Length: 409
Length: 115
Figure: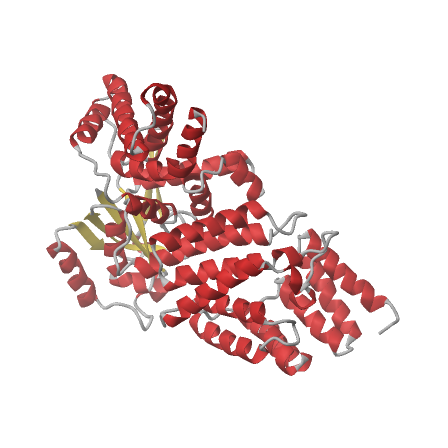
């Protein structure tokens, strides 16, 4: 490997770790980022002569720290406050222990609930995944300026409100972990089912979310972390079957199960089992368990729908939500027929919930279609169509509507 | 670091909801914060119908009846605390009994830039 190649390899494997430690050592995101770049700049100059150090990470942290103190000293001529900061940093020792915790500290800080949810996701992708602002903007269909502002504002709040660089204590952990898992799942969903736009999946984001899930699993193997990772892997395993060759959406019951990625599926199923044996599982494990039952079924008809309905019952108790109720209604329809499903969906809609959720109307349309209630089915599909922005879903609904108009009913 | 915890609540509900704290509970919590060494000041406020807003424009004082802004929730009281970081401040804020009925806005105190 050429030396530049070696520096690049070290950058790829170590830059996020070095950054995480520099943020702890320097106490500031921006200072740490500058220090990281300066450290690699020095590495490119020095390593050809001196060779790659035995512990490149420690070398980079220590070089970055030195550069940051140096920079503060140079600026300190104009500000006594910076002088003080430089003195404090110089006096403080840093240890190479604890570096794995630094990565967790970074995750929990980027996903701190005191930051706006969209800022948490942007900051996580920027700092932990090292995506550029342009890449994040592209993924979230926002402008780079918007994303950059979100990140600047979030860093400002971390600094001004003094959000600590800490792994939460045992007592705070469940709630704070929820926030981290929510960010990872948001990134995944944004990639898996883009809410607008023409591509049904944006692989980059799903891959980043899975990478984050694996990292968290390595650092903090809590049952819900396993559950979320399993859930993402199981969804991801079906992706090749989810769109047809011409970009049409293919629903679960019509998917070619031969296209499912069996190694991702096996990994996901194993994680679900591992999580369920802890008996401390929550909503992510339960959703993953449902996905695992689908994964194990040879076809939609041969799916253990009774077990799926049972898992939805438990999930509803853990996480009461009309969307979960809707999914349960679909499972009940598969087990007991469309009339049972329709009754459940109608009771949700009659309560005034999910009125603007296209999937509620498209489920209603599907049940009515199966029952031969063509007029109602058409009205429900039209309502669903008016509520979705996503091109493949629109095409799917339009196809259904065309089928209903044709006389073969 | 100093944080101001502003307690907002719908005044109509603050003392009438089943979960509303009674004054002795509020006092007990304030004393607990005091005992932890984090208390700088804390006071409950009279309802907004007692509020008067003052503005100074072009050297002239303008005085109007009522709060600065008509909102669904009104400022009902405050805690000024000393905390290590936001997490600690949020912990203190979360324990304020009125947080069960209203909400508590936690704001870091800014240092005046005099240099």
